[in-house]
Image (cartoon, rainbow, N blue to C red; front, side):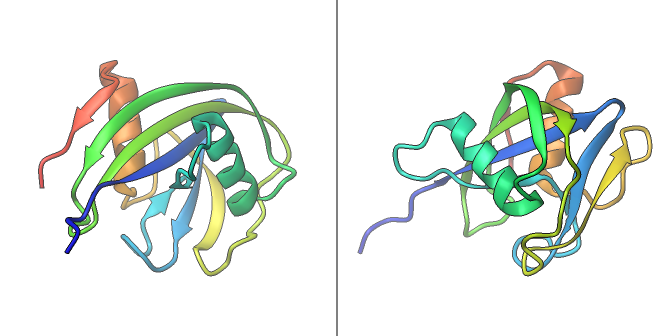
Length: 143
């Protein structure tokens, strides 16, 4: 039997001024929690390509971003037996509005003020925001 191995997850947090784009998750890890666009890194895919693909798949092809950059990496075991190494990117909104293109994965999308975020936040988004506040680019998460 082969031992389980961590999966590589990618995520993108999009900022529009003092707001971030969040969707309320449907099913899977943390149903009802507010998360950003993200998913699994595909074989031979670049991080930037992965997050832009996830953005288009989950929030629609008309939503455009700029200033895409790395924010942090984290080791996430909260959803055991799943284990993720997460790569989180950040970008600024350029144009377009989110569309509910995957209603099986999200209930809705919205722009939320950083000073008044909805709860609960999906753990990768919480880690991304903690990275921004602390300037840490690596976060180890205990169970």
